[in-house]
Image 1 (cartoon, one colour):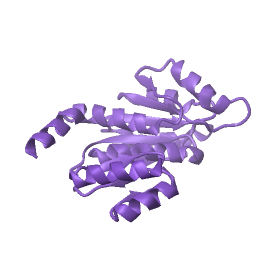
Image 2 (spheres, helix red, strand yellow):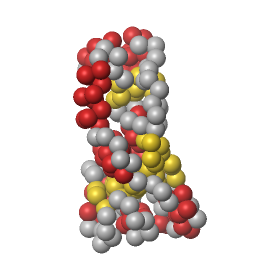
Image 3 (cartoon, helix red, strand yellow):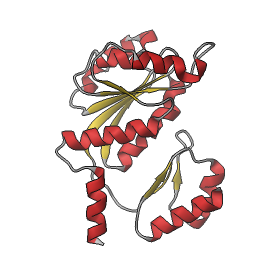
Image 4 (cartoon, one colour):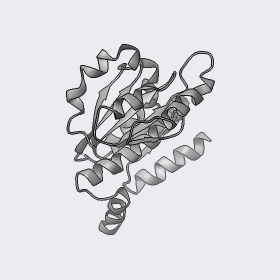
Length: 205
């Protein structure tokens, strides 16, 4: 319920903890905003966050989508930015016009991992994994026509891909993909696990 959400944000921010929530509605945002003026809500991703600390960002991941309808799920990549990862975005580069993907391949160089978000048949992740040498996190979305079964067709394509290096998260789980990508990026950059950072912050307090 919204009152409980507001209380959670108030409690954590009062302790100096930055807070991020996903799938927030405008009503929830307005309620949190009234209590915490610093609250920011992104209408596309529905991410609701309160950030009071400046974060140093390390490394880089790439987030790409098959089409523009996949963008709301992909924009949950703000989770990675929240935890200190640089994010490069390429939207609407699906296999239906594969030249759009191939013309941007240079930007994938140096990335710690790639998040590939796609609905319909979900072919984007397998194609990307065949072109890069870093882990690919595949995110099926519930976007598509007819027999896409609410994203199940994309999920099965990604799970059954013959390309190496793919890990698939659940349908529309942009948050989960972004969090795992953050962990991969931290390790690739020689950084600490997120849990280690939280423990150290508590000790500093």
